[in-house]
Amino acid sequence: MDFELKILGSSSATPSFDRHHTAQVLTIGNQINLLDCGEGTQMQLMRYKVKHQRICNIFISHLHGDHYFGLAGLLSTMHLQQRTTPINLFGPKGLAEILTLQFKYGGTQLPYKVNFFEVDTTVSRKIYEDKTMTVHTLPMLHRVPCCGYLFREKEKPRHLLKNKLPSFLTPAQLVRLKWGEDIYNEAGEVVVQNADVTTDPKRSRSYAYCADTRYKEDILPLVQGVDLLYHEATFDNSLLHRADFTFHSTAEQAATLAHKAQVKRLLIGHFSARYKELNLLLEEAQAVFPNTMLATEGKTISVLE
Amino acid sequence: MDFELKILGSSSATPSFDRHHTAQVLTIGNQINLLDCGEGTQMQLMRYKVKHQRICNIFISHLHGDHYFGLAGLLSTMHLQQRTTPINLFGPKGLAEILTLQFKYGGTQLPYKVNFFEVDTTVSRKIYEDKTMTVHTLPMLHRVPCCGYLFREKEKPRHLLKNKLPSFLTPAQLVRLKWGEDIYNEAGEVVVQNADVTTDPKRSRSYAYCADTRYKEDILPLVQGVDLLYHEATFDNSLLHRADFTFHSTAEQAATLAHKAQVKRLLIGHFSARYKELNLLLEEAQAVFPNTMLATEGKTISVLE
Image (cartoon, rainbow over all chains, first blue to last red; front, side, top):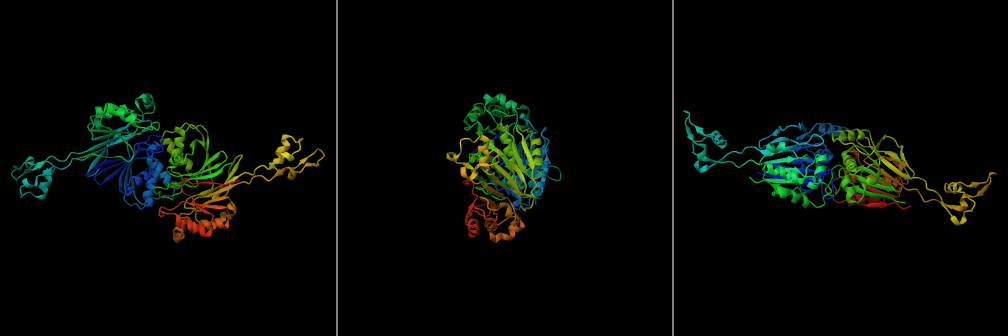
């Protein structure tokens, strides 16, 4: 099953010509999720051939424009292109009010349902669940209410060893074996030991999206051991004071968090427009956490099972 | 003096990959005016090397997203890049309310003043005047309140023929000559005939920006004889019924208006995403009004004195 992240933009507040504002597409199985939606996201979706009509869920981290000014336009385009499938929209207080006002003055009545879920950015809560994944909020520390999002595949069924399965098993019993149970007879005796006929399931993958934030270690237990951590790295460490003042992080801080949380891979982004070349930030992070990548536009990162 | 129009975008509601939403830059002398501000305008300004800090006035035609969803982002970027110069913003009811709400939730306090002027889109009124130009609204007929804008250079001073000017003239008398007066002595007799010492001034140029609208002839007297007329041409004439239904115009209709108004040049834009090639629209318009151009991105049109 796919578990793939595509970067559409990674520029901080001021866009530079070849770097767009924050937006990411996370595909888990058939589910396409959009994470933040900076200005121009609908054009970036076209550029990178992501079909916006297939997006099921949109997660907005906070109400700074570089993270959501493309949302009203994207929802309008879905409308103009005859979308009828409902969409789930997660974001902080204020988002629904702004969109409602924009659509009121635009005389727009969307022909599909937007299920809006206002998230509490101050706590980690499960806000979404379907057959394949769960999503939890990750409280961030920024100038306005802001949260990240943690995506986890659900536990997968055990693998059945077909050549070892007794023929008398019913479909219901096969399902129980897949979920780790033994099979009993009416007398309560084990007739099939799960360990004899199954092997461990494929592992469940995870992605933590840490949007704009000061460095904060209290999220360590929440992102411990994730397969892929995105963490903002607006500045290099010589601008630590500025990072602190503006409630952002440095590349070294992002890497320190990745190291302490023992994640598998780190992706840094939200680069200040002052950096034409990004090697400085990459090298600073890699010195602390070698398995670091830059969230450059168009990059696709697959997490293998 | 410059009188120059630069096209930043000319796509209708749905953007296509290489055509952005509506935005135009009109330079008159030292004044840089932005006409509409679709999503991505701040990136288009960068692409075409227009310094956004030099924009004095922004005119928004209506509150469909393809004409203003880039505005909050542009104003934010001006803020982040330390603008302190006030800016004038003209637009219909609702625009200030939307921006105020966005900036409230973004925790944004602009360090420069936005002088907002709510325009009545149902009448033609003078809404702006400075040393070099006047701006009038042009009522459009669209699904939401919508107006175009008419830009006219003010009357220019007459040209003084230096070798014919008597030496006794005072500076104040020279100014009077520039504005067409004769010079009298204390007895009330003409001592210098204006026609003897001046020639006609350079002519005053004009640009009419007709945003989204059904074809409507009642604006003919308002745009009569302008140097350059922009008129939307969303569809070709085979889709006349659709144009009418969606309150848009066809290329033939735009050209008919240009012909009847006896304008000097016509510029058509706001092309539907269904047209990959635009020759069909251009040829349709040129059949009625030969001096027609396409509003393609990056095009610059100078109106000569």
